[in-house]
Image: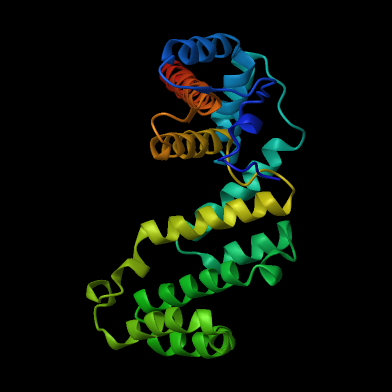
Length: 260
């Protein structure tokens, strides 16, 4: 199960035995934060980097990183990444039917349970046909596969936007042009990748993403606090999380530059 990004003590594995508030003794807070940041070891940042690489299916980089750090690679990790990478590229490159087929092989009941994701994938197939100027085939596909979603209120507006593409000779220049963009495909592909990971009881967000979310949440919370009533744990949690993220990103950039 993913950790709530606002619950920073879970993310950095720090539990305080003393709860206190501060007024102007900022030095004490930073001193305490520094003490815990010094305790962050290489394994922590290596775990963050490996989590990011595995999540995004950087297979060759994972193998090189594991070899250089001496870390243990999870069982069946490469096979899982290969399958997820193939599915991701099928979505991004415009072969949605193949992506659906591969998804059903890897997680056979995922799309049946996740109607929103199934709708997004089928909609992309509709877009593929429209972009290929196969309007008759696109309409037939919509009637067979997308019409059932029209019975659910939350899909109606989206359906109207997709169907409106048929009215334009150049759908790329229509007000709904974003539905044809690579960015939209990547968004759907990312959602599918996260769903597949969650279906396998794996984290759907990387450790780095959760730390960044946590850092943002804590900083926002601190900024909203009254200046005379700031919780010390918030300061410490923020600087520890930021330290881990910064070091992990630095390690990853250095590693990639080295292997290239």
